[in-house]
Length: 162
Image (cartoon, rainbow, N blue to C red; front, side, top):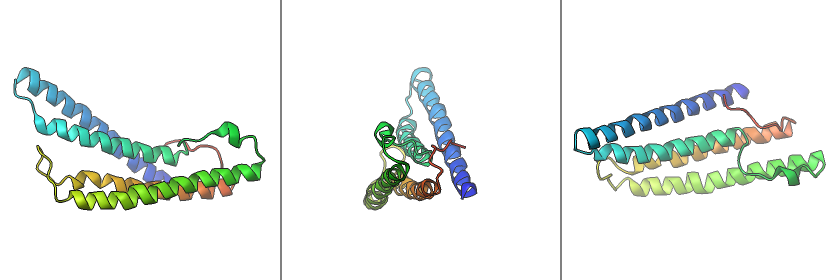
């Protein structure tokens, strides 16, 4: 299981890093074209916005992997260990349901709907950029299931990113 989790996490780290690097390079290109060439690049500005959304959602999936999502440990720590496990599992189930309903179901709906609309500068369907919603939803669901397995097996410490 850890090999599977580590493999997905490495891929996510790589994609988030590539997205960040591309954003930096495209922003430098924007500055160069705006102030040196006096002819601003509109497509790069639009692409940076979409890459930022991708990087943020991929980062949210990494946070889910690490069990770093929002919680209130001071309350959970007041209970006995079996109740702590139950509450931790409940938190993961809530994250799973959110990912399934909002990111996967809603993401598929909005992606399908947006395939008919084109971006203004890039000329590609907007739905291409929305694919990250269901993708991250599925990744979050996988991570929450793996987290529940870890909790049940007694490995409740937060995971560190690989």
